[in-house]
Image 1 (cartoon, rainbow, N blue to C red):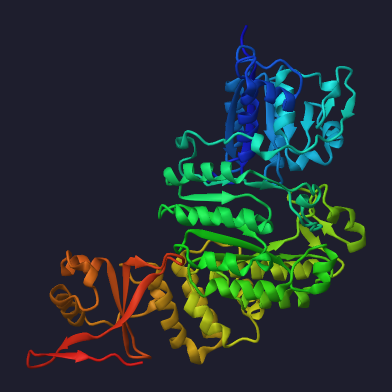
Image 2: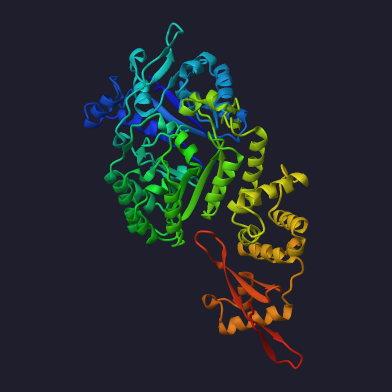
Length: 605
């Protein structure tokens, strides 16, 4: 008898992403299908259901990963060629529209294939989804490992927890949710790392969240669980031994348990391989002095932190049932910054209850003045099943009908306000989060009332000049910035030109000079003499002992800034481990004078 073939289909937002959920479903289900009578088989049956699970009668399960950027026809073709008996789609806000199209078309070309859905986008309105899509046999609700294992083991669906399904009579049955499981029973999903080459590795050491933020689905399930530290350490060691570039923890609030967080952070610090970076989503106000001290001793780039602030308006924080004290967040963020070894990414959400444009701009300024490495300005998404969705009428929340259900207006924010914030978001991405305009933006901050005004003004300039919605090269962004300065602060144009030139060469060893930078002011003779001297004396570049003058010239850039009378040398072989900026230093450059002797051009500030 041929084995039943099951395909777990995941449509990711980007190629570099992978879907941890489908790998967990497959690993857990396959743990059921071990030799009969074994201890593992007995434990798996107890968790997954009463169906007979043996190696001989188990189905063949495979994973099919795609991205939302692929053509639907290409995905449809691939699914058809796989010829699954059972096809399961993993559903999220970023892929549900494509999944819905694929459901309709797949049912036409694979009429005998049983289609099942799972994931947060279908768990909270499963019966309605089944009504809308008669092609779908059933939906796995919530945490899926045990439910999926029970399904593929052949357990009677009429009494199976955790599903809504269409029975043999065509009637929709909505069964109770399954109790959450012990995380230690979820097998480690990673083995052959070739499958995950060039992809972000996702890992979870806990599920659930202790908080009740009204916009988040994690607030629906209060059952916080942790994977045992012994297992976590073994699995982290696997990543370290394979020198995985980045491991992204998907724990909702990683540091909600001090002991758990400390043990993991200590382990990765003590076993640091010099390559792997670990990403954590944390609540900064919960950080202890002990944790901050440990972080301060870590290799630059070993960990990075994502910190959700969302708003600094106390009334808004209370209304969304969030626990956050911004003064404590600010204090902890500043302490971590002092060591310049950890990338910090701070988040804000526009469209929350009680926050109008003035309030949001104040929240923006509060967070911006902490100078995080990145400031993410996101927009409220009114998710199915969240408490926020139940308050839509009270808050006069108007959101898009299609995923990701992003806010269009609220009781406090008009759509015109949302458009202003969209413009600010775009400018923050280009001129702050890119890290390419650091000095120029710092200079501009001194000329405006507030950080929010800086980015709002830039956005309005883009709109006036009809520059928004266009693709711009990196050098064009510098030219646009300079054009904005020329229009707004014309008397300071040359000062800002120098700032922009500095920023440009800080990141890029460009051999062709961009137009905005103006004429190259380092005399050919001066540059020649400088690198000749470095080849002999290595005054500024002692780490280039094995290189000749031409090689040194290719790996560095020498620039003259006339307003301050300074020569700056940018060294691209050495970069800041966090910002990736080239290291730079002020240098003296020799110039040949009329009688053939050399004189030194002294640095001046």
